[in-house]
Image 1: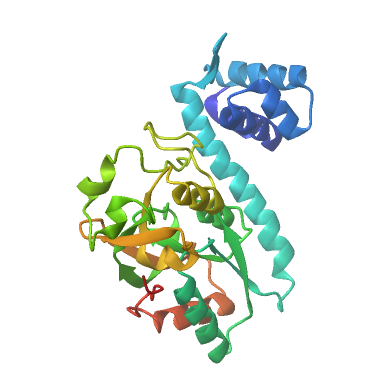
Image 2: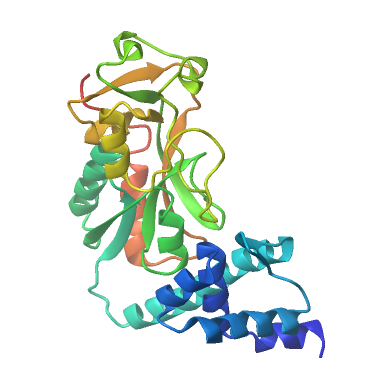
Length: 297
């Protein structure tokens, strides 16, 4: 059997099984997530390895780890599953000409800009926009899977590969600190000031593959987790200035003068066009360069 035949024979079920194991790095948790028993899941992964002729996972008493080949398949399998899901979503919605555009954005990010975009879209007679809020780094998956038509994303921190983008605004970043910390009294900070603060490490967000970078900071997945940890004096973070819309009274935001500038963009899957998307993109272009507006300190 040649390589092309092997690829042609791969099933979405096998890819879903592998992605679950690769993300959980635990067969029991993956089986529970999939709603199946563990033995058939283990057999399916072994069969997949035999058919591909490579080892995808290293298994020992300490647990499960991805091999180099496994990392490649995880990336490709996610893309393939997203493409299948997107085809189904877009096909079902193609007949509904009255449906709203689905816009996904990080909760708390670009709040004022989003408000202006929705108002501009309404003024220009664009299609209604349904807003879906997500956590950090999830917009790309929503777009690639077809669960959203368009997204507010941020360069250079978000994954923009495969998307057409419209730049909206560029802004600086601030350090979000517990109000009682000495650094909170400073008028400005540098990255060096916040990179190694005793007792106040920078929070760590998961990478695209679900793993966390090394470091002493707490692992976080949601804005609410982060807000609590900052208020408790357990962590700090550096964020776009306009993201302070979700700032608590227990937080203080201080400009970080040498942090990379962040550009907010309107992103959509490359090559996807519709009258509704075109109208929204035109409304977004009218906002280009508008100040992102953050709450007063």
